[in-house]
Image (cartoon, rainbow, N blue to C red; front, side, top):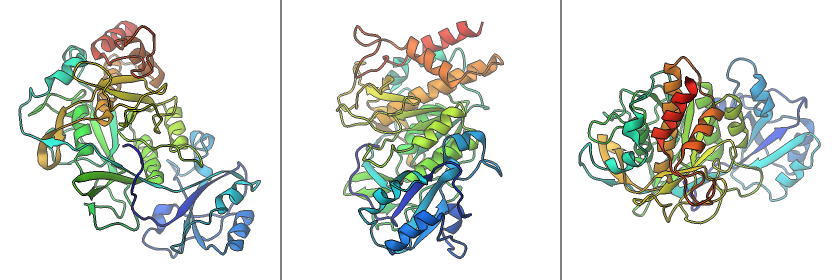
Length: 439
C-alpha cells in the first residue's frame, strides 16, 4: 500500500486512549453495535462527556479492542488496548476542528487521534498462464532450493496475511489455509467497490488479487508456479483492505482501526508471523498501528511489512516501527528497484520485480512492488521457525531478525545501506547459520 488518495466516505469517528486507572462507564465492543444500536453507550467518562455536550455532538462509545480471553491480559494492559475507545459520531457531520485538541488537554486522556480510511493504488498484476518454472529467477535469487533442503515449513507454524483477502479455492493455497476473518467494514461505500465492503464475517475472499498473489509467494504448492517459501506452513487469511476500481486502476481501501483489529485478531488466534504488504503515512495524531505492533512484539509475533513504492526516502507504517522487519524490493539485477521506498527503517531487500504467483479465479499473474518482496522475507521467518521446531526448539522473534541481518548479502561497503538495509535476502545462508546455532 502506498500514499493516501481519494478515499471513500466513512462515518466520522475518533479514538481516545484513557490514562491508567481512570474510572469509565461499561461500553460494548464496536462490532456489537454495527447492526443494532439498541445497547450502544453514549457516555464514557464525565470530563469527556461534558466536552462533547458543549460541542452538541452525540456519539456512540465503544471499546476499540477485545480481550483475548475473558479478562485483559498483562500484555494487553501494558500496550493500552484495554483503555482505548472508539467514539462514533451519530450524525453525518465532520469532527469539529478543535475537538480532538480539546480532548487531548483533558487530564484523564493519554492520547487521541482521528479515525481514517486510507486508500492506495495496488500493483496491477498481469494474468498469464505459464508454467511452474516461470519466474524461477526470483526464487533462485534468495537460494530457495538450497534452503528447502533444511525445511519446507511445518503445519504448526501459522503465517497471517493481512491484505485484500485470499482466493480461498486456489489449488496452490487450498491445502494451507486455516481459519481467517474479514475486517473490512466501510460504512458508507461507493458504487465503485468490487466485492464485499460492508459487514464483518469469517470469509476473507479476495476480489483484487493482491492478497492472493502475496499468499502464493509464501505458501504456494508449486503446481503451476514456483513453489512458495513455506508450502507446508499454514496460511491465515485476514482481509483488511476492500477493493475499489478507479478507471483501470485497483485501489485498496481500509479503515486503519480495522487493520489494527486484524493484527490483534491474528496474534490472538495463533499467528507466528504476520505479513503486511501495506503501509500508511503518518499524518499526525499518533502513529498508525502503534499499540497493536507493540502488542505483537510482546507476544513474540514477527511482523514483516512493505517499505512502500514511491521510490523516495520516506516512512510508511507499520514499517516505520523498529520492531517490524521492513522490506524493500530489488530488480532483475539484484539492485534496489527504482520504485522501492528507502530509508533507515529498511531491513532487507528481496525480489520484487515481475514476480509470478497465484491470482484470482485460480489463475496466475505477474506483479511488481515491495508488496511482493515482503512475503519472501515473511516466508523466510516462517521457514526458520519451522526448522527450529523440527529440532524441538523455539526460534524467537529477535533470533530470527539476528539471523536474517547477519546472513543477508551486503550491498555497498557498509554494514547497513540506506536503500537496501542489511542487504539482499539469502535464505540458504540463513538456514545454514540457524542449523549451526541449533547444534
